[in-house]
Amino acid sequence: AQTVTQSQPEMSVQEAETVTLSCTYDTSESDYYLFWYKQPPSRQMILVIRQEAYKQQNATENRFSVNFQKAAKSFSLKISDSQLGDAAMYFCAYRSAYNAGNMLTFGGGTRLMVKP
Amino acid sequence: NAGVTQTPKFRVLKTGQSMTLLCAQDMNHEYMYWYRQDPGMGLRLIHYSVGEGTTAKGEVPDGYNVSRLKKQNFLLGLESAAPSQTSVYFCASRTRDKSTDTQYFGPGTRLTVL
Image (cartoon, rainbow over all chains, first blue to last red; front, side):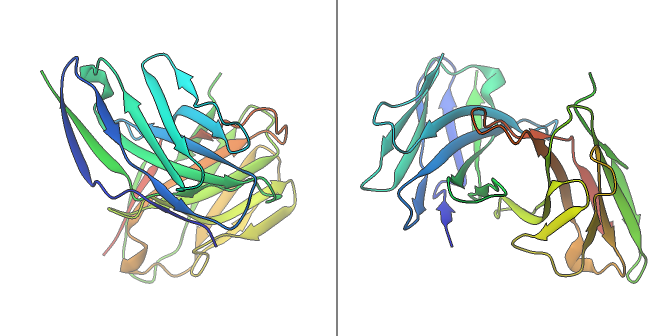
């Protein structure tokens, strides 16, 4: 079974600064997908960014980018120019490419606080 | 366009009571999921469905049952609630099309079992 670990329960960043959230995962599969989801106080889960394991290029979405290190099984999220609206819980998630149900396995989450 | 809705938003039960959580989606998605979220543990999959009339167990299925009688609805039942089932429950759905990977989540249901 795959596991996803987020070792930082809480992180803090100054507005306009850059912060990196860590995620590691354990799998024996070669083809999979990795995600970062944001959960604001409204509790809605919002997809931030998606990475396909067979692609070496790191995914980028505006101020959000990832550092995907497949050999190290590491998938960190970098948020540049942090904004107050970025304050939320962030979850790293894994999806096997071989699973018919397309289920997600989530990490425990990192609470990001943004200081004005 | 409502997306994924969940009913109710909050509920308090006594130990041993039963209840059903309703999830509805209007996006014609084939796949639907029920998760529970507990502090420090992220979201854990309870049950899921890959189509109308089909269900399967996830990571933490004990104490829950599900039904998918209609494509747009996915029901989660607790037959005899226990305090360990106090949690926030999320429903999600997605299309079968693997070219897109977005899971659409509902707003969650906060359940307290006394």
